[in-house]
Image (tube, rainbow, N blue to C red; front, side):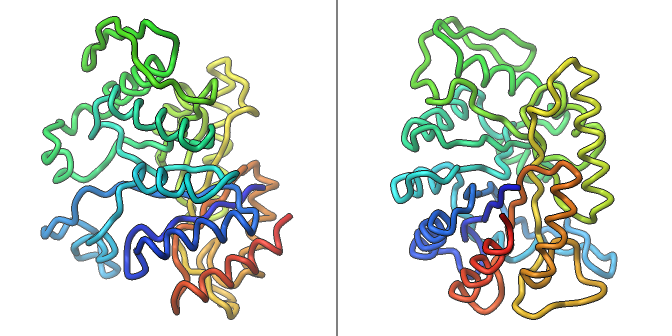
Length: 302
């Protein structure tokens, strides 16, 4: 199983120096991928469910969030082998031709290391900011993916859909990869089935072993029903839980706890058909401690 690590692009440790350090150390430790994500706004409105059921503002980490593709372009120049992924970019906030060109340019700059993780978005305030209706999700997202794939194909590029049109044109640069992989961030059954139809993989959050294993089964079964080679598609699980030095014991969150505890969860996920686990939370007590724990975890997983 591959392991990935999120760059510190938001929260208290977000800085150019820390992004550089994590990127280079992750490559030295033989992590498979570095990941970033997109967040346009931290609204003042209380829209996020809190632990007591009351609505709160979305977490303070979102006060500052580095742009994902620009960050990965910076990181591409600092690394040589490690893959560069987004988990995720909200595709509908961008014109397909613009987003496709940005990913293709990053693929060129990095020598073919890009994983295009995208999603539909959920926050009404962000949709309003980019002047895109929420109802474009679904059919509009399907078109967006098709239009991006057209952009990465041979010239002349042309696309005619209900929501997006590209007049026959030369459109470059093309990606280095003959097939730049698209994975879709989704947790629900409908999103998983959509990914099985139009994407190269899924990127669900991990809440429990049972939930992840169920997502894997749904995804691969749905892909096979579409006549696709299900085993060639990937499952990249995102862990939004703490990594700490001392074991948390009974009641710990799935994929959270000490490196030894997490390693047992990873073994089970490998047997369930998960290909890659992305650790998105920075460990407490600063960047030095975080990197020590990530080194410990990496040493426990073959």
